[in-house]
Image (cartoon, rainbow, N blue to C red; front, side):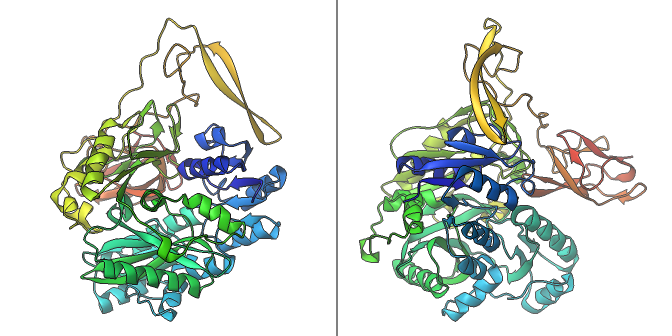
Length: 591
């Protein structure tokens, strides 16, 4: 078994891997950007090394900096988590080229399955049908228009080297093609470091059902069970569950066998997820994620196995250790992704900021996987997943009621979260009956009355002149932490030596989200959150209509159209592409 594992990731998944390693007696190494210097995964790891930079490209996608941290730490294995480099064959080769084990599939399997285009071809060779689409990268937007005219609209544009809904855009007609293609490529580069995109027919009312598989170095392959991930917004999952509701067992068996066939057909090793779309009793291969999934805890709770431990053991050369017939599934598990987003009115606007209160639920069959604690800051530069709340019940209805109870106990202040949307989803008759689809949240679920207020930070206690602070220091790029009693400067999250915010200053508080633009209605179009302007869509003198997009803001790896709240003439444009803005900043003035 490994002696020291470096986790080339951040947030919740890094914390998740660190905990399993600790249980197995394996030392852990964290890496961190400038913004993550005192993040939870850094505080929990045995060692931590600075990567430098703030954005993902400057830090967690900086291969040389990560390789340097591996060499300096002496780690003998690297766990990539999910996102970032988890599905990058070049990164896997760079790791193994240093004589270090990559805890994932071989680079050759990543190239086949990590590329969504070649994975479609591999599935076809294994006899598994995919969603109708093109198996070549898009070279020009005209190809998208031609595809839509031939196969019908809508069309899905997807990142060839991505997953998790990042870099995916749905096009409803020719007039949307060019802007959607550009946006998909920008998101693909920002999150996966590759701009390639491809096309698929967008099914009308499918369910997203995926199969968890494992393969070892001895040629064994098994499927542990399926997860239904149909409750989505912006093609990213909100609620996941296992087993899938209203899912015939005969289909389950066929899907599991198909998933293993696809994996073994490309020489796969370690954890993987084969994703399918399920509609009208038929399933279609969608893609294979060559990594651990965000939603893996629901499988863990149903099958009673630690999937990260299984990953580590397989990477160390051990066999799976059990057969397909020995896989037992008990009860039902549901996971809610608690994201820093304001779901009010169904807009799901990113809500970066400092978490001033975080109260986790407790009780039987209740689990919280979090990457943050009170005082931590959710940055605009990274994914906005705060925590995953997972529950287990004896059946689906039992799990659903338990999740509603757990959500009611969960308290997050300082940023808006998706919790009100989770409550609305789990309480809706369509979800209870298992009648929802991947388009249900955005097309059917009514979130007009949902609100997610951002609570102000708690008042300071003036009776405590000093507070206990954790202060970090870097020596030759390696992080150390010391505790000091220091005068209370008013930045404490509470008195009496309680936990204090770990950032010197909190980011500007975003105004409450009203319309999609965040504007005041006076002609001053303001952004509702901090982020980066990626496109300016108007110029001085242009005539704009009410609701027309004037610029595109990227925050937390998502692009958001900032729209005019009145019609008129553009008097001023105060931003340009690449410019950072804060919540409430006026970007365009209309008269």
